[in-house]
Figure 1 (cartoon, one colour):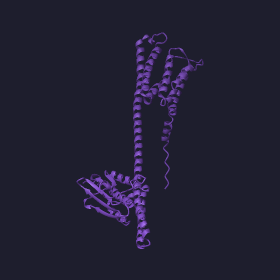
Figure 2 (spheres, helix red, strand yellow):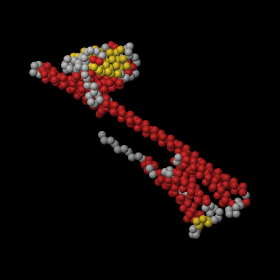
Figure 3 (tube, one colour):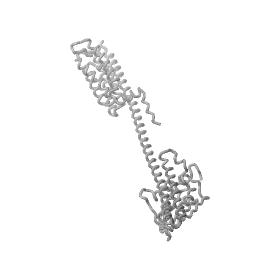
Figure 4 (cartoon, helix red, strand yellow):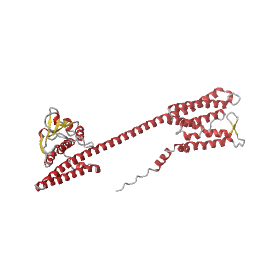
Length: 439
């Protein structure tokens, strides 16, 4: 069934994403353009239809109109960069506002740019930029109050009506109002900046967690592939060892004893079919979730059948399982015991020689608190320590370690005068029981 195409996001979501990728465009459309339109209306009204190129300032002086228009534009246009470069934008706005006040004309609608710039610095700028333009905005509020006092007093230096108290009160009110607007903008911007940084920190943390989960998933997949490779090695190694031994035996007796030769070839066929079934079962794990559960993994109860297969290859095996001492075992431990026994018998079959004999003992030492599996033989005392692919003996050691156990494999001659090879695996009892089962 083909995958259904992903539905397109709603229009409003696409619009938001469009402007998030183009911050300057959103600020231009929703901040700069409206303020420029208001400012244009203001300048058309303040010029009074003058064609001289001059307009009247706050002190009754003539002010060059084009210069004031340029300053008004410089006090508004940088808002387009307020979220991208808040420090640069605020610096240009502050310079334009200062020039307007020095020209004794005063800002028009461009005064709205100041709290917007302070807000942007507090939200998007670093701490030094934020505090610098907070102080700059407060200084601008004081200068605006002084400009209003100068405007009220006129060029004579006397306030209107000769009352300095009214002029100073007006200056304080204007300064206080402007400072309150600047401070409020900074506080709101600082709060929004803190939330933005917290959100970014959470998003970064989530990204790191996602990367860790992906890494864990990759490691788990690698571990699963290694486990399957180890299973395939054990199945193929054992089955091929049995098949080779049977083929060699059948070749030698085919003329003298055709019946035995036929039995040998029948064993080869049975072993090959069983190996193929095992391989299909394990490879199914790669294609289908839960495929491994369709057929139980081999365990302790399958060791006698394993021994019978090896015996049919001509190797004499003595098996002793102290079943009455065995605790309930988890499926993983049972599989480990089976594979260790299988690998050890396969090595004996390969390297023990024609007169080798193998011994298997499985039981529990409750005084030591251990489950013990011993496989030894009377062969030549050599084994394949490593098959070149990281399996073999290393695979047996890894299986034991997986459940907190240990495994030793060495020639018996190191501790006795007997020839042969010995493998001993020990598992702590607290690690072999199924989860949720007590003693």
